[in-house]
Length: 153
Image (cartoon, rainbow, N blue to C red):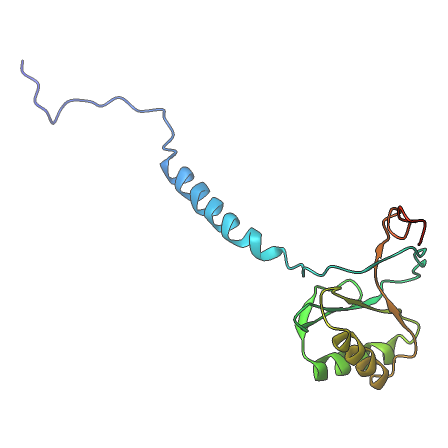
């Protein structure tokens, strides 16, 4: 008796084909690698240093950041930083202060930037109806301001 190729029985394979799973994992890896740098939306602002004690905050403050080149970033209580222009800053802060008049408004300006940028923001906030504005800074270095070798401060 001869057996032909058609009558040959194949054994069942008990293996899992993992190639589709590897493809999906590689696509997810690429997606996460591309989107992760976009999640970091911080603004590089070097705040000036001072030897002052920090204030206790009751609620999340409204933060206005002024970069070295004069760009404005607004962070409303707990929200993400967003790039705004002067008119948008006035409108959003005015609306937020109308709802919550006790909110703290803080301005942080880059120490490498011009004083005029921070001054303009302070004037804009006053026009938006903010009565109290705080200025942000870094804690001072204890070695700064110490006497020099000639005894002068």
